[in-house]
Length: 114
Length: 109
Image (cartoon, rainbow over all chains, first blue to last red; front, top):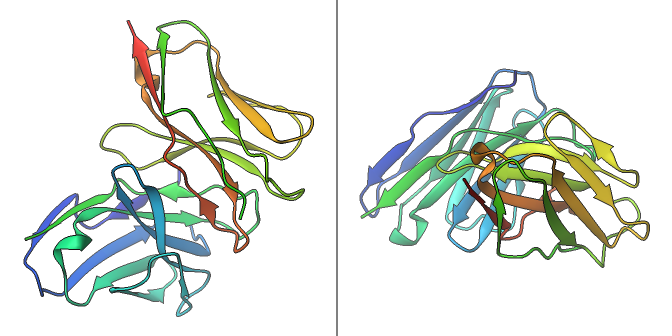
């Protein structure tokens, strides 16, 4: 079974702090994704990566950056956390970029920015 | 990018079949139709996907209309553990999944 793990289930940070969210997958998948999920808005793509050291902006990249130094690990960075970044953050991975691919999700990190 | 339309919520009785509808009238010829579900306090999980023909797996069946403008996810015998938000999704132009608000499925015992 594919396993996607996220470093924390719950996180509380203060405005202005730098926040690191880590995601690791164990199935040698090429692609990794970061989403945020807010009530009534569904999932919105922040960034994705098709290869090591490669990144592409999603729909809402502002205020975020990412890092993929190793194939299995994809990090989401909030350079200076703000209260409007309070959300559920979901990491996903998939094997290949084909249109029929399946994405596998981690359990999510619920971030509260005070 | 093509979008999907789903009812906000549906109710069903336990051990009865459930038909979850999805409209995607602007679907392109090469867009796959994906279904995911999200149980409370968990990340989404894959349910099924298809292109043109109906598909079956151990979790569900996917019935795709002949013109591909709509599809239906069928849970053959719903259990309380099937209570979740079900998302009908098409692939975007950048191979991204375009997520809508989904259908909240309520199962009554």
